[in-house]
Structure formats: structure tokens, C-alpha cells
Amino acid sequence: MPVEKGNKIKIEYKAMFENGDIFDSSKDFEFEVGSGNVIKGVDNAVVGMERGEEKTLIIKPEEAYGQHQEKYVIEIPKGQIKGDIKEGMVIKSSTGLIGKVIKIDSDTIKVDFNHPLSGKTLKFWIKIVDYQ
Image (cartoon, rainbow, N blue to C red; front, side, top):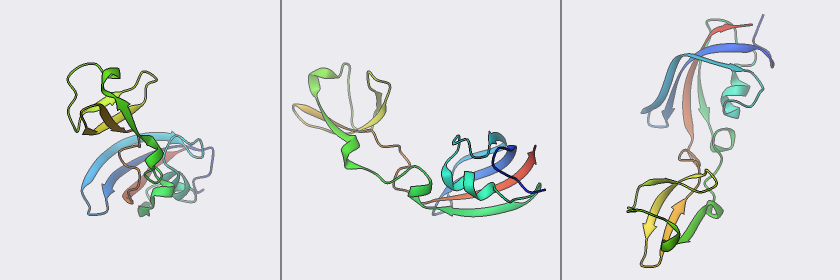
């Protein structure tokens, strides 16, 4: 019987950039299909697969972490950020958002709050280990 939405499944996977560089992997990752706990491209791809089946996917940004959006790149007055800030640093806002410092001017700091993988096409190799 193939994997269906609502199944709890265990997969093995390798997540890669388009050039094949691996940025994440697991031999024991579990999630409920259709619950929204993984990116849409993986969630949709496992439906219909069988135990032991393997698949390589190319996942466009819309099915992964979305397109990079300029509205999430924000200039913050320097005085609002405490500590020694440098370009490339990752900071956390008072509301819990994570952003990367991309530019520092005399009065402002530009921070990108997009997901680091937004705008990227990703490649995934997945194998169905088990499901119920």
C-alpha cells in the first residue's frame, strides 16, 4: 500500500543545492504526510511512494522556502541594535525573527529576514524507510 496523506513516515534524505553540495541529511527523519511540517515539494513527492522506494527531486523555490522578498530586507537604526555588529552576522529580533546583517552604514544596519534558502532551487534524494 503506497504512502498517503496522514501517514506517519520515516525517510532517509540528502538535501542539496543545484550543484550537488549537500547542506542537510538524515537517515531517520519522521513526519506526518500533509501536516505542513516539511517543505511542500517533499510533502507532495512522498505521496504514492512505497517502502524502500527512492526518488531524486528538483524543488523550485515556490515548493521549498519561497522566493526571496525585498520586503523582508529591513534597514534598522544603528542605535536599536546592541553589541558589536558585523556584516554577515546572524541576529535575532525582539520578536524572534532571525536575520542576516548584509550592510552597515553610518546610521543604519540592513538586515535580511528572508529564510537563508529562499529563492533557491533545491535537489533532494529521498528514500521511504517506513510508514504507518
